[in-house]
Amino acid sequence: MSRFVAITATALAVVLAVASLLLLLAGRHFIAGTLLTFVAFSIYLREINLE
Image (cartoon, rainbow, N blue to C red; front, side, top):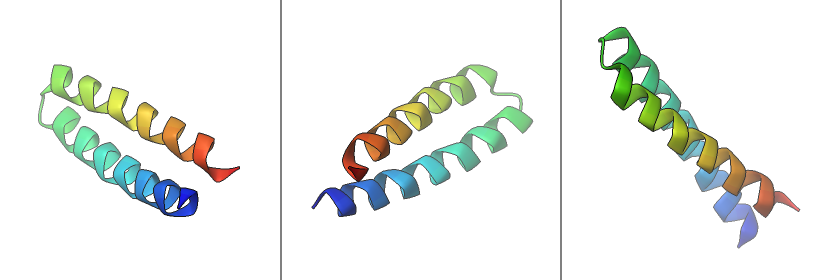
């Protein structure tokens, strides 16, 4: 189960990072920064579930 959580968190981090980059280029800096916070949380979830 933890492997599934790690894979899901990795996919979520990638999607949020791409969305954040697109929003940054569109000039939505606050929303892009908020998404980067969720990227960091997804990476944290991945790391604690990889064991």
